[in-house]
Image (tube, rainbow, N blue to C red; front, side, top):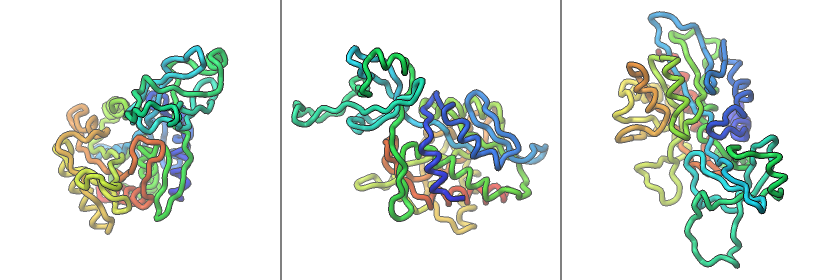
Length: 336
């Protein structure tokens, strides 16, 4: 499995929260080789590995499918598009960004920016309801292509950087999907002492909604949420942020199962994979928060891939961290 090509494919698929159906077919095709069954249930992509048997644990592996983006809220008489945010968007980075508007067809646009020559000198960030998108179309032409409620994604191409780093949109959480696919690649044709459900969940960025309904239906014994966390850059807090390329971050929190966290740590150390502790004082801000309290409770852990520039058009991760995450998951499952 060539992880860089897999990540490029995943990164460049559009699927803003609530409109993940645009990504379904492509991601299902990537999952099918490793599963006996793959289906879409209430928007969630769910795959099955192995037959569920009494007396054997059932493991849920999750990464969320959706990406942050914007939504069309209004078209002005001049033909500019007003927007709302879908998920956490930092308005400081929006001016002059290239975007794609997903209507009856995809059309390119650019977020309006005031030239510095005309600026009043106010350097504060715009509010989301002040953002406008220029497509070149008139209001009448736009209304034939897009409607209120259509989604908008960043138009950023995947890039390979030095030292096994890559950059692109939607690494949160398409790199988690890649890590799970890599773990299934490593486990294929092996006899396991457990069965597995793979969940590529919807609407994580707007409240972990897909995870909540899927976990109730799947009813696993153990759940592992694979997501991203803060990769350290210049001046960042080393308590909250960890370096890229030094291994995935294993979650330690009162809301997580200490048994699962310890087993993941022991697994990493047993196979010689570097790992980093992600200590959280309460909940995790990931789908794990839904898994741990579904039905009568599920033993839940997290593995997070360090990522720089979260929720921007150019998120940066290490290929080695993705690979290591997949290896830890595969070895953990072998040890069940």
